[in-house]
Length: 472
Image (cartoon, rainbow, N blue to C red):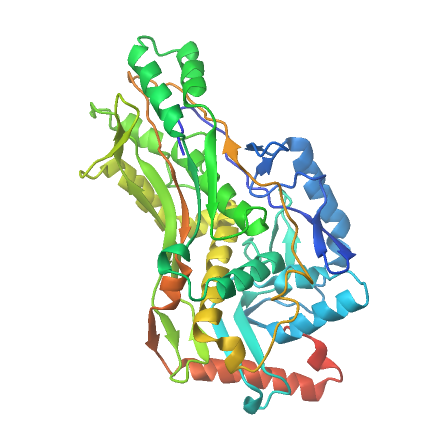
């Protein structure tokens, strides 16, 4: 992504998640956007031509008002806060199938996975473990959820975005499709890139500039032109892809100072440059967010899994834009760009609460790892269970969005410096298959798995019909 930054006091950015109206059309979808055909994810909307832009305030108001109207339908009476929410995927699949068979809408609890906010454990449970049916459990912190002031669906306890059914389905289906594919083609990624022609035109215009004023800013924006949105490894019209794009866009705006970080100790890269004005050469740093997991822990029988680690790390690489409009990678580290990347990594959890689009991104990373783990280890087969709805796009599909294709360039003069700072490309990269292949044995996880299985068994025996409920 090419961005140009000015050191001014920008208002704190807000992330706006898509608000979903729970409706139903058999064999198509149970979830559709409610604000026209545009939708809004992380403060980003896409117009009919595929051009990416910021959400308007009136749409933000619609999101908030609609969630207030829907608040009474959210199933929170028995959804207490817990550090160990367990979801039965087989039970969820049966519940979804029943909704479709009866032409009924899916519930908010299904759409938002009973308020699960992170995947920490995955358990394959064959019928031989005392279950009536084979199953796969997901477990992690969860509880009641709400809409925040920006209309985003977050946990009541900590304001962190909850996981979504549509992202789960896309990750599960893509994981299965990627089995047997070359490792380099299994990555899920999103980037915003300038065109080669735009870079050449930018270099020519920059070489002719003598005054750095508003007219120069307009000339730079026109020279670089629209940038390309490139999405790989996931359907470009999915919510999952919209999250990748919106998080990447938000990161670049924070780095280049177009929006002030809503947390302390995360100055923009532009502020760091202003404080260290001894650099004579203006380089072109790029930043991207990548997988950062510790080796997955598993039981000896590889039926119990723990997902660990920070999830996401921000990386950077420096380059120069030559007079010919090409990018030359620099061997020398850009210490200020690295300082910003390290600060972004360190403060990512705090930023995820203030801007839930980053928590949604972390959730998508977890779901991608889960999808790869399911396919790589054959967990559904080993648990002797099938997902007739979760695994079949012809039966149920999440909302589809306009495919993003381009984004306008934005430029500004850097106060007190003769030159331009160019942030070239970057993006988001999820290497879920590599993460799923890095494991270590820890049979202590077996006790946690047993706890999840026994809890389900006790509920089934104690409450008539409790076996139909797919979370606890």
